[in-house]
Amino acid sequence: MGKNRNGGEKDEELVRETGDLITNLSNDPSIMESIYTLLPNLEKIRSAHERHRTLFHQVLDGAHDKEGELEAARNYVLLQMSLVHGIANLTGKHDPTIPQKLGMVQQNSSKRVSVAGLLVPENFRMAYEGRGIIARASAVKGAKSYEIWVCESDPLVESSWRHHTTSGRVHRIDITGLTPGRLYYFRIRAVGATDAGPWSNFISMMAI
Image (cartoon, rainbow, N blue to C red; front, side, top):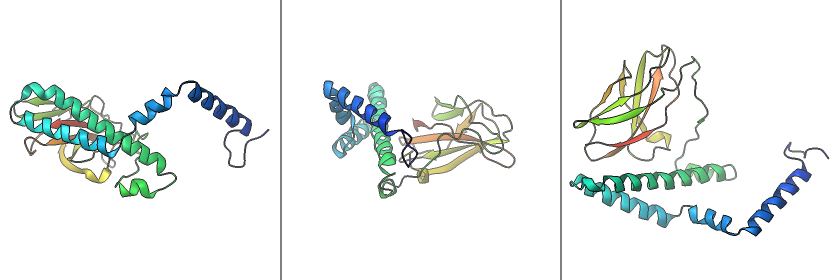
């Protein structure tokens, strides 16, 4: 038997794979239960947001013993946001209005090299020094400078990002002009003579 008219899997293979899936799910109902448990919902997101905000203000007020809890709460919020956006991207193939209503921008995350051959700055990291933040990354061949952009809201929405600083060096970039106590997301890219390279993964840091 050949492929179907849409060029997808052969029908016999699809029937077999679907049957195997049904068998596995029937033999272990906890699989679907686990999936449903992990799915985000408004109440989970609202609760995660409130916990993150509460811990954030407690740390600002001097409760430095809660910094570990704050980091865990921040990561959980990011997880919920990531799950929502991932589901929206999948469902958006059938209903494009879903990611549009969330203000999402489709991005090609597989792009790791620019037209001019610039790579992503590797080992992007940030650290506190005194009351400031220092960014560092590995140098990129062909780069003339490096741009750091910041985001103060949803880092998965492209329109949330804005340019913050440009530096001719990458081993030490001083990040200034931030509002103390505010959480920021940062990303970096190399800039060449005619082209800008792809973005790094983003990092979250709280200004102090």
